[in-house]
Image 1 (cartoon, rainbow, N blue to C red):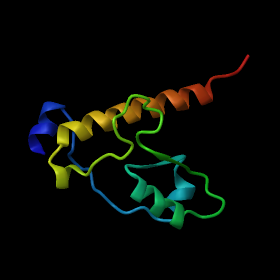
Image 2 (image 1 turned 60 degrees about the horizontal axis):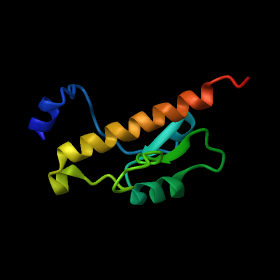
Image 3 (image 1 turned 180 degrees about the horizontal axis):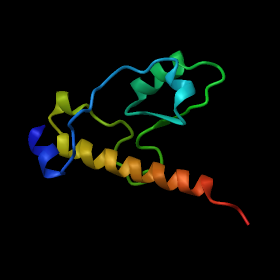
Image 4 (image 1 turned 90 degrees about the vertical axis):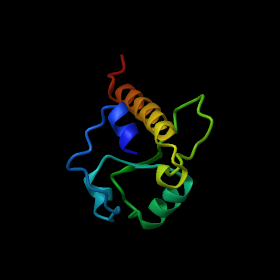
Amino acid sequence: MAEAVFRHMVAEEGLVARGITRQDFGRFDYIIALDSGHMAHLKRIAPRRSRAKLRIMMDGVADSPAQDVPDPYYTGQFDLVYDMVRQGCRALLHEIKEAERPSH
Protein backbone atom coordinates (compact mmCIF):
# COMPACT_ATOMS: atom_id res chain seq x y z
CA MET A 1 0.00 0.00 0.00
CA ALA A 2 2.74 2.46 0.92
CA GLU A 3 4.20 2.23 -2.58
CA ALA A 4 0.88 3.04 -4.25
CA VAL A 5 0.22 5.94 -1.87
CA PHE A 6 3.70 7.34 -2.52
CA ARG A 7 3.53 6.77 -6.29
CA HIS A 8 0.22 8.63 -6.59
CA MET A 9 1.21 11.30 -4.05
CA VAL A 10 -1.85 10.69 -1.89
CA ALA A 11 -1.81 12.52 1.43
CA GLU A 12 -2.96 9.94 3.96
CA GLU A 13 -1.97 11.77 7.12
CA GLY A 14 -4.88 12.30 9.47
CA LEU A 15 -7.30 10.09 7.53
CA VAL A 16 -9.38 7.76 9.67
CA ALA A 17 -11.88 5.17 8.50
CA ARG A 18 -15.23 4.88 10.26
CA GLY A 19 -18.54 3.24 9.69
CA ILE A 20 -21.53 5.03 8.18
CA THR A 21 -24.22 6.08 10.64
CA ARG A 22 -27.89 6.93 10.08
CA GLN A 23 -27.00 10.54 10.91
CA ASP A 24 -24.68 10.65 7.90
CA PHE A 25 -27.71 10.44 5.61
CA GLY A 26 -28.79 13.88 6.83
CA ARG A 27 -25.27 15.29 6.95
CA PHE A 28 -23.99 14.54 3.44
CA ASP A 29 -25.30 15.16 -0.09
CA TYR A 30 -23.77 11.95 -1.44
CA ILE A 31 -22.78 8.66 0.14
CA ILE A 32 -20.65 6.54 -2.14
CA ALA A 33 -20.50 2.75 -1.95
CA LEU A 34 -17.48 0.96 -3.37
CA ASP A 35 -19.36 -2.22 -4.18
CA SER A 36 -22.82 -3.76 -4.35
CA GLY A 37 -22.46 -5.28 -0.87
CA HIS A 38 -21.82 -1.85 0.61
CA MET A 39 -24.75 -0.44 -1.37
CA ALA A 40 -27.12 -3.09 -0.02
CA HIS A 41 -26.02 -2.23 3.53
CA LEU A 42 -26.51 1.51 2.90
CA LYS A 43 -30.01 0.92 1.54
CA ARG A 44 -30.88 -1.15 4.63
CA ILE A 45 -29.80 1.54 7.10
CA ALA A 46 -30.91 4.64 5.15
CA PRO A 47 -33.77 6.61 6.69
CA ARG A 48 -36.90 6.90 4.53
CA ARG A 49 -36.39 10.59 3.87
CA SER A 50 -32.69 10.72 3.28
CA ARG A 51 -30.97 13.86 2.07
CA ALA A 52 -28.03 11.86 0.75
CA LYS A 53 -28.00 10.40 -2.73
CA LEU A 54 -26.65 6.84 -2.75
CA ARG A 55 -24.29 5.95 -5.55
CA ILE A 56 -21.89 3.15 -6.42
CA MET A 57 -18.42 4.56 -7.10
CA MET A 58 -18.21 3.24 -10.66
CA ASP A 59 -21.65 4.51 -11.76
CA GLY A 60 -21.11 6.80 -14.68
CA VAL A 61 -17.81 5.21 -15.75
CA ALA A 62 -18.89 3.77 -19.08
CA ASP A 63 -15.80 1.75 -19.96
CA SER A 64 -15.20 0.29 -16.50
CA PRO A 65 -14.39 -3.43 -16.52
CA ALA A 66 -16.20 -3.84 -13.19
CA GLN A 67 -18.88 -2.10 -11.12
CA ASP A 68 -17.46 -3.22 -7.80
CA VAL A 69 -14.18 -1.73 -6.59
CA PRO A 70 -12.13 -4.60 -5.11
CA ASP A 71 -10.81 -4.33 -1.57
CA PRO A 72 -7.08 -3.71 -2.05
CA TYR A 73 -6.24 -5.12 1.38
CA TYR A 74 -7.55 -8.51 0.22
CA THR A 75 -6.40 -8.35 -3.39
CA GLY A 76 -3.21 -6.30 -3.15
CA GLN A 77 -4.42 -4.30 -6.18
CA PHE A 78 -3.79 -0.83 -4.75
CA ASP A 79 -2.92 0.74 -8.11
CA LEU A 80 -6.03 -0.69 -9.77
CA VAL A 81 -8.22 0.57 -6.92
CA TYR A 82 -6.59 4.00 -7.10
CA ASP A 83 -7.35 4.18 -10.84
CA MET A 84 -10.93 2.99 -10.38
CA VAL A 85 -11.66 5.45 -7.57
CA ARG A 86 -10.10 8.27 -9.56
CA GLN A 87 -12.31 7.47 -12.56
CA GLY A 88 -15.37 7.18 -10.32
CA CYS A 89 -14.65 10.53 -8.67
CA ARG A 90 -14.22 12.22 -12.05
CA ALA A 91 -17.54 10.79 -13.23
CA LEU A 92 -19.27 11.92 -10.03
CA LEU A 93 -17.80 15.42 -10.31
CA HIS A 94 -18.99 15.64 -13.91
CA GLU A 95 -22.47 14.49 -12.83
CA ILE A 96 -22.61 17.10 -10.05
CA LYS A 97 -21.42 19.89 -12.35
CA GLU A 98 -24.07 18.95 -14.93
CA ALA A 99 -26.80 18.91 -12.29
CA GLU A 100 -25.72 22.32 -10.98
CA ARG A 101 -25.46 23.90 -14.43
CA PRO A 102 -28.25 26.40 -15.02
CA SER A 103 -30.52 25.34 -17.86
CA HIS A 104 -31.34 27.92 -20.51
